[in-house]
Length: 283
Image 1 (cartoon, rainbow, N blue to C red):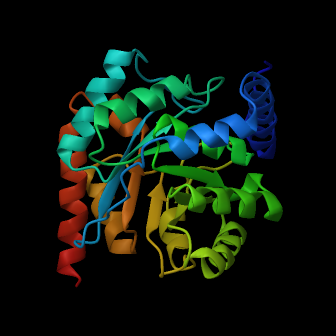
Image 2 (tube, helix red, strand yellow):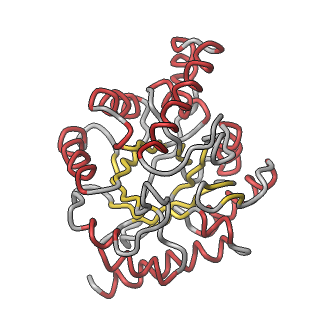
């Protein structure tokens, strides 16, 4: 596969690659059979956020386009990291399953689910384009999926939310700007009674793939306040967690910082503590 740079072409390239993976998987396992297997698989744990109004979704990813290689992706590495996240109090574990730019796989997701042992849900994070991939996530044991609003047309996003709702999976809707958030707000109005939804802001610039300082604070005011608000990217320290909690976010999705940390479980604890302390001060 040719190297994909930043910009809208990045998402377009990721979407094209994702569609190729769907078709290859569908050729191996017809959708009807996948649906039947997913329906018969054990129900994953539900996402439960703290009444103290701040949580962390801790991520497993072994490479990023912006940061390059982060960690080894062995099964033992996934097991140990995920178990540490859960012990430290993470509300869920996000697992990158995209192979070409993030070194992810469905095997990583299944390994994470085994390591969690039903304690908290795992979330499939990928460039999902088809309900088939939501069924794949459910069969692997995931309790949630991330959907990138910018990549999906209205029919596709509705189909995937409805599929997730049927499978009892939570959905994190990822926005990059105010227009994305406006779409998310309409989806929340329509689906919040039947689906477990969260709305997140990814503060990476789509051209440079670098974090844009201040974008989380700039966009939080536009987010719907009837569902949990998630800060994605740009949270690397406990101080960052406190800052976004003050801004009004309920959850931090943290990946690269945890993968780079020597003691990631300690960083998870510190972030949760900082966020909850700041929310308590302002309640």
